[in-house]
Image 1 (cartoon, helix red, strand yellow):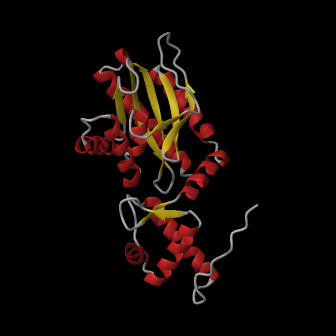
Image 2: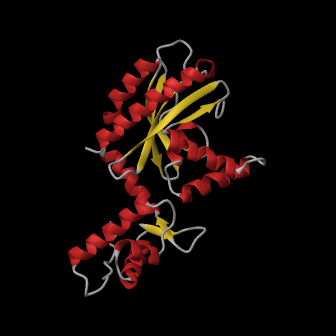
Image 3: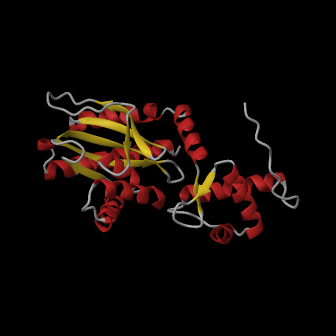
Length: 258
C-alpha cells in the first residue's frame, strides 16, 4: 500500500470547511464543459484565489486534476477516471438497466445494448439479442472510441470539450475530408434530439439508434441502443425506434437518480 502524505491547505481553514471546498471544486469540474482556471473557480464558488490555488495544486499532485492540453486551466485527471471505473464495479448498472433493455428489445424486436464510459472510450456491458433470424450482436467488454457510431456520439455529445477535441483529432487523422464544423453540428443535433443514429457507419449493413443516460448530477454515464440490419431501419421505423430508446434512457436516468 502506498501512503500519500497529507498536504495542509492552510491553518485558517477548518478541516470540515476545507473538505466542503474540495468537494465543491471537484463537483464544479464534473459539470464543466471544458477546462477551468483558478479565477473562474474563485468567482463561481466565492472563494479566494489563494485558497483555490492551494486546492488545485493539491488535487493536481494526486492525479485528481491535470493540466488541460490546449488551455491554461485544469480538467479531471486519470485518478478520477480510475475511481469512475471502480464505481461501475460497486454499482451494478446492468441490474438497473436490465429489465428496461429487455422490455425495449421486446418492443422493438431488435437487439438492445448497454454501454458505459470507460476512460476516453466506451465499453459494452450488456445486450439483449433480437429473436429475429437476421440480427446484430455486439461483443461485450470490447472498448470503442468515442468518435464514431451512434452509441459513441450519444455519449460524446454530453462530455466536455476535452473529449470532443480528442475525438475530432482522431477523426481528422483517419479522414482527410473530415469537417469539424459538420461534426460539431452533428453533436449539437444529438443534444437537441436526445438520441444519435448511425447507418452503415462502423459496419456495412448495420444501423443503430442510441440515447444517453445520466446520474442525478446530470453527468452522462453511458447510453443504451437499439441495433439491427440497416434494411429494417427505414426513416419512419428509425424515428419510432428513437422514441422508444430515448424514453427507455430517461427511465434509467430516473432510476439512477433515486
